[in-house]
Image (cartoon, rainbow, N blue to C red):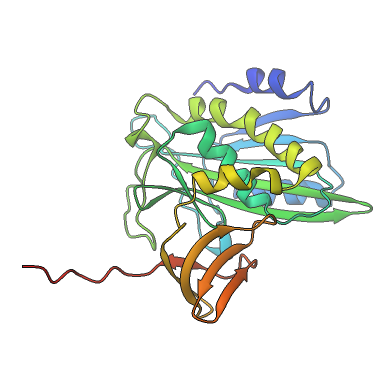
Length: 262
């Protein structure tokens, strides 16, 4: 597959002069590799793409399924991580800023499920995993993104899967990377300078959960009312407005009761 590495580098290098792009045929996890490099003192900004991940990771320790090919030579998913030093005044909302950049770069039908999943028609199309590491006075951020290009061969998943081919049938993994990579770098750099607050209105326009009854893994239930300026989920409960800021709390739309009409 011909990856647009040079075009991405040309778009990003004026903003980050030491930026580089690497494509690996296989690795355990692009996030894990960039965290290993950071521990070894490699802190330059880098985009690391893997054609196959043997141990891809999602949020809360979940596995991210990443096949090498479909058998026809086409990658079924796009997996990459972006690593760079970052020093925002407030880290809250970074995953929302990343997700917003991804959906705005791909298709108007895509929605964001707080805090960091991309959904299409009530199914999960992409996931985001953010990890950080302090190295001396610097903090290095690793932003991992996994996007289903084609539907995974196994549908035995906790959340039903969607694929980019459903809305962009001509876009393969390489073209998808070309669409999302440079805007994502710019979005993260902007987040480092301005935080999440300027993005709140744009997030609400893509918010899958807004106005829906939710059930949270911590036992809370209520109606979603968007997010605050720091990216915390606002939940209107019987006891008032509750802010959920921990990504360790999972939220899901409440089951819809069957209608009893004739």
